Length: 280
Image 1 (cartoon, rainbow, N blue to C red):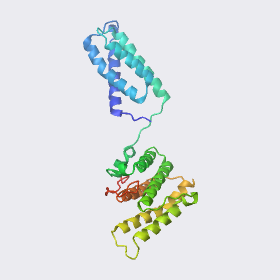
Image 2 (cartoon, rainbow, N blue to C red; image 1 turned 90 degrees about the horizontal axis):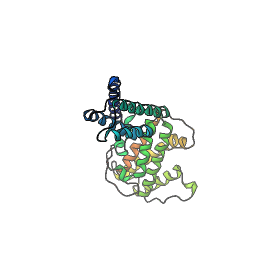
Image 3 (cartoon, rainbow, N blue to C red; image 1 turned 135 degrees about the vertical axis):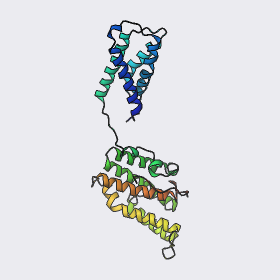
Image 4 (cartoon, rainbow, N blue to C red; image 1 turned 120 degrees about the horizontal axis):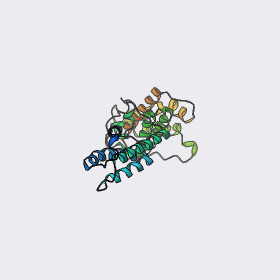
């Protein structure tokens, strides 16, 4: 999938269309040689349009435009007005053929912001450094929302959370499970709860302390496990837009909170700003 620079493309196409209209209106001059001043007017819009043709992969139209540019750049220019009109017609014809073979999609003003980097989505500078794998899942989840693939976006959100669980386990020095039966959220979360209670006993755990922060993370994961993660992995649910957005926001909130305590490898990390994903 390619991103079209819409303003540049529209501007180049509009200039090309104006040139075509001008030349078509002077049929009595078709046999006259193009003068340098005319070449100077024609070259910039054709070059700009050709750049956009290359950007979107309109290969045959670009070949035609490149050939036209090369002839315009010759000194002296060998083209007549009629040659220029024919060349413009050829470029437009090939471009029309290209458009017949592809599909163009647009994103609304509400959807476009989701095509951003993880750090922009989460408003968390440095997140991609501390959580490179999770950043990929954040971006994929957001892209799926932008493209209307809401169930897929939840799947990526769950992958994001799995990365978070692994990082949290490493930070708490919980051994990585080796048996397949141990690699499920229930057993892993149980191990996390035991470790938190061991490091910060509940009877002496103070509000706003490090132990309290980890307890909050555990509670968030435990709440997510049954209604979201299990249903997603067992193909039991198709998610509506508002459901997917809610899940992604919760996952993003968890990840930015986690990133204030640890990185993806379990190492202590500096505090990062809270999640803004999708606070829009």
